[in-house]
Length: 122
Picture 1: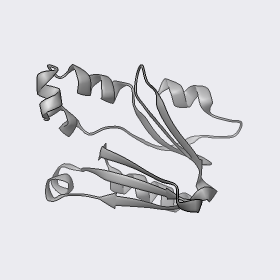
Picture 2: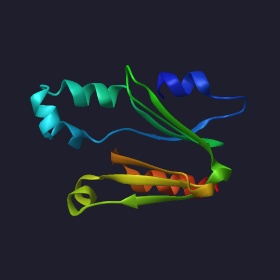
Picture 3: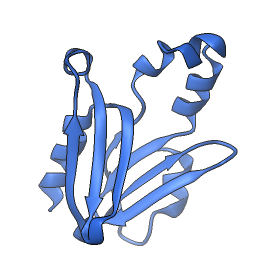
């Protein structure tokens, strides 16, 4: 579990599922031009976690972006995987909350397991 999530768990909250960016982020032009430092920092500083009460997603190092939503406020978790994504186990997730809130995250490792963990809690 990452340090952001560990510091922000509330009373009686526990981590149910955790994932991160897939290694495929290293095989991009951005990765090659930055000598693999940018994807390494992205992977090292990002957390994708489902707890027994909410979903917590934190990305970024200097400019931090966080997404936290109670499980009861989430309508669905959609997963999109390409052919290569299915073979290598990565994909994009879109979390849709009540009221039309929509957040997308790309190149996530084990997106189907993430969705399954969410569905088992609801």
